[in-house]
Image (cartoon, rainbow, N blue to C red):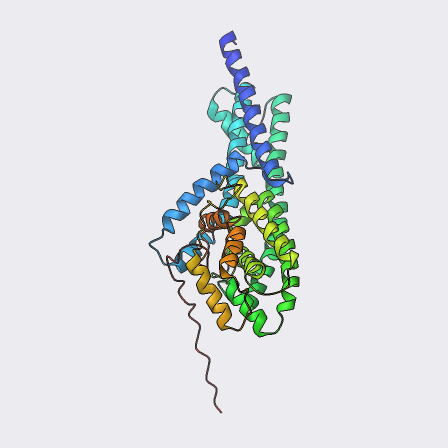
Length: 366
């Protein structure tokens, strides 16, 4: 074999090893590494699939249609991801088999495909090709096994998240509203139980901060109910805690401070993972999507329901705004990213969710 061709085949072998190692590294970082890792191959797949899905689910369509379309986005992207990894491994081993002496690239591709999918219709020649064939078959099985093992962990985290989101509807309506939540606690005479609710959601925020970065696809898994969203739930709880802390005339409860801090730290970690820009050290000059007029309307609604408010409304507004600007930008950005349904104080009411058509109750003879 001429030296030039020998050198070319050696470079093909090195390139093939690097490509296969890159695919394995991507799979480990996505499926195994227990920390946030914004992996380029996974990001490319999800970004590309997101663009395709958003072309279909464009803003001109009714929300119900867009919600049905986007419900498939994360599951389909997860299925495409192993296909991309397997394709990369297939290409890498094609280069390796060609470097071992296959006459044509098509022959090397045939051996690589036969090995990767354990079909065995393309025989290998020599110990080196046998070892490469066995290793490729093992890598193919490993990638599929990682996906299978990954899904139960993801759906366990999804179930924990959605349990709290579903329970919130009982307390805060759907889409959730901080005002409705405080009104309901007051009407039931359970305002003193709001402390326990805040403790529960502090733990929930810690859970999503870990799960929605180490299992990033979870952020795009939509709730079973189209008017539910983990982003809207987070906003309602933090707004409720901020109103409770700044505006409602109750004894000072430090748990509200802790829950708000747990919430905005969780949203910031998720925003950092998705490379969302936000003001990290907000000041009095930092803009807020909630105006003082909207805050005043909320105070009037609470007062009309008999909830005692602090007498200095100006100070209450400054305190509420001081809490809200810590999570305002990340909350709205994540709502746009996940295409969350419109909710109170969670972005502009650019659309109305169509009511679910329910069957008429059946009439039975008397």
